[in-house]
Length: 212
Length: 211
Image (cartoon, rainbow over all chains, first blue to last red):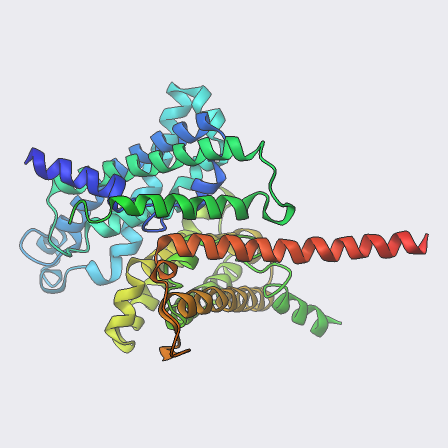
């Protein structure tokens, strides 16, 4: 059990890093990675939302969307038992869960950690449209290669958040140096950030094959 | 006059507000699906459909959506169209194309381009111009996807639309994997910046000559 969980975390943080191998969550990755402090804050907020949303979307997927005896809606409307709601409501229900959760995090942070709330600014509500959050929910529930259990899905969400934070932290370190470097004018700003990300992705290739 | 304006609403999405090379929005799918031109075209088509439809609907109902809850309303409208596209693609397109686009079709919901147009254009303008605006930006994005994906396909697998380009070329498969995507887009953005800089320098010189 512990071995399986450790494998999931290593795989999702290093081998299949969401930013560097799966191209998810690039907007905040490039937008908030200019300073190390805000990169850590953003990473923590995203990790929190990802973990919770993985847990909740797993429950929604297994007890509301999938056809079968477990479906709660089918108890009221028996016709849903055969087909389930998976085809039509998957995307909409997931994004609503995430949007609600982000609103909750926003309210909690404003009450409890006002300093962090101020420094994250516009990027906090934008977690809703961070494709890494919706991406991990969708990947948890694709059932390929196998159906994930509740604990595995939640751990995968948490690990994906950690992977995102690691990538952002490394990138913010590089960009703090880049700000002082002498870069050709057309490449300044976003283009050089992309090229550095490419080189980082190349470095992360070294982890591939470590976990199947 | 108004016809000219309409044309401008359409063409601005292709050059002046090109979503990929000028606004740098919607980067995640632009990198993930550009492994071959076929994938790029399919993704561009799907996103353009969603963009046009959601712009149209949002612009029709813009007067009844309260300002405070407009974002959730936009998301629900967009998600409905994305679900339609997803079901359509699964029904009519080859399964291997669906497999290679994978989760990036449902992820159109959180594509920044669509949200950006809903918020900054469709919510403030009439339905007809909103449709033109959506079609223009969608076309601009599809064209950029084709540029990136043809470069990556030629370098990475030595083919274009699945046809072999050269007999002797050894494909560098890193180009169709993650690092190649980042580097190609970085260099392309640099190229467009370089052109813009050169243009403004020329304009400056011309002004100085006149003086």
